[in-house]
Amino acid sequence: MVKIAVTGASGVLGSAIYRALKETDHSAIGLANSRAGEGLVQLDLTDKDVVSKFFQEYKPDWVVHCAAERRPDVAEKDPLGTQRLNAEVPGYLASLAKDLGFTLLYISTDYVFDGTSPPYGPASQANPLQLYGESKRGGEIAISSVAGARIVILRVPVLYGPAPQNSDSAVNILVDVVQDQSGRQYKMDHYATRYPTNVEDIAGFLVRAIGHRNPLPQVIHYSADEPFTKYEMCLVFAKILGLPHDHITPDANPPTGAGATTRPRDCHLSTTETEELGIEGGLGLSLFEEWWANYLRKQ
Image (tube, rainbow, N blue to C red):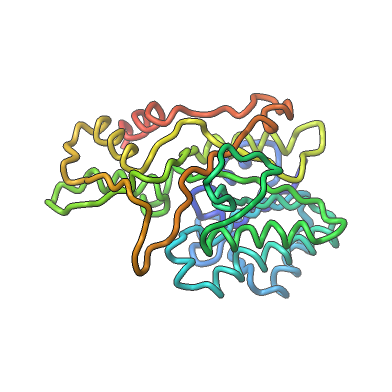
């Protein structure tokens, strides 16, 4: 039986991974901070002494590190807090991984790339355009710098799936935008191409990867392959819900002006190397419109 701790287990991705692990023979514990509850253990990852004591006592075989400041706009407003959570905390967890002998799986992002020459493989040159991407790249560098630590970096794109509230996901929140028939007008990004990926798919893949017979490479890419701008996602939701979308206007220009957070144009992650790992079940990707049609029908 493998013992696994999941940080950020109250988030969209962390909760999906924790649920998937609980359905296996593995022993899993979910960790959260501000939203700890419903069986999760409260742990402030920025308190090194508390974190060290917890992992020394729990003795995990794996730590899946999902906790992060994932919102680029918020990251720009709190650079020190973002750097601490997204870069310094992973580095400390890697030190514990070395000392305690567990494998650290760090969730990173397609935003470590600049979006100018997709698709990007695991060995492609990182060049983040904004503070969020820089902080996540900083986390990658921090954990890779700990000699002797067993680490895996899993880069993923924008995520969607079951969530406590739609605002927890940059994709799910678009459902609320489409459903807002109050007369409010929205300008929606039609510049950046994204590859929305289902958190339940990632969770299932990770469960299979943890049980894989061969060691995992240091960097893995996992991504769906269907391209959408945020405006195009809104059109899908409007179609499924049978709602008008006249209140949503496409904006094909890159973000500019005071307070605008730079977004890369197209950070498509290549999954060729991931598919070649021979993990049982492969990537197991959902189709975007089909998944949402089934999900929204049940709401």
